[in-house]
View 1 (tube, rainbow, N blue to C red):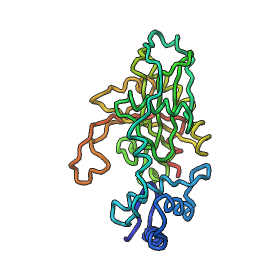
View 2 (cartoon, rainbow, N blue to C red):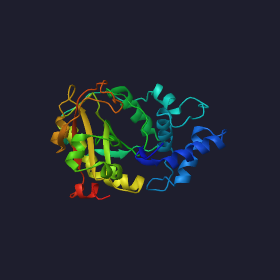
View 3 (cartoon, rainbow, N blue to C red):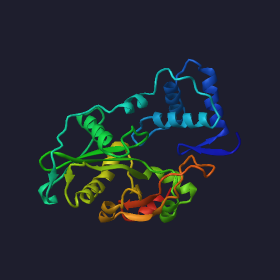
Length: 292
């Protein structure tokens, strides 16, 4: 390999690939988990709180294998993510209609869903059963939210995860060139799932939920990962939705995608066209996102 390639937001040189190949050759008894953990330690690849980014390293290794640069050892057991995503356990929850005026539900209680909690099981159940895309485990930095009304009844949930690697409309609007995007992508998060539960019919609830989330997510991200985020993004399938709640919550429509997937190297794969929305969390967000 010559030159430098970027994988999982990390620049890799021929020397880096050689290091991985050397680890594979010298430690044939290592599994994929051990390899990703050791690689993080050698590179000192950590998040803002000092924890190794072993899931990002695992994804990086898989991408290198698919591109033919390395050959990973056989899996020792089925993917735990695959097993978890195969069936989302049902959690008892009420589905009685909730309707009326927004003032009757306020103040909303927005809570971060913690790993291993009962709220996490409920969150997974609700997204898995009622969101049209279902729910899969996320890789990388993410925050889950569960939203309840003033009576403690769940009314919705939201998931924020890694920003899209590339998006022409977004990158042009921010003023990102490739280097700035690669350096600052972790300061942007993608609202990958947003759900108002189907038995809840309350005007203006969705935009109010988005406003509540926007007011707190920057502090929540800082607390969890040790660094702030400066803006939110989302992609709305225009054949299904009009993006009304995002517009009402003052998100900015930047344009639309080209209907291609990240694997569409030969311009043959087609995907649904999505409208691109962005919500700045601070004044001077462009300066922060282009500073690195």
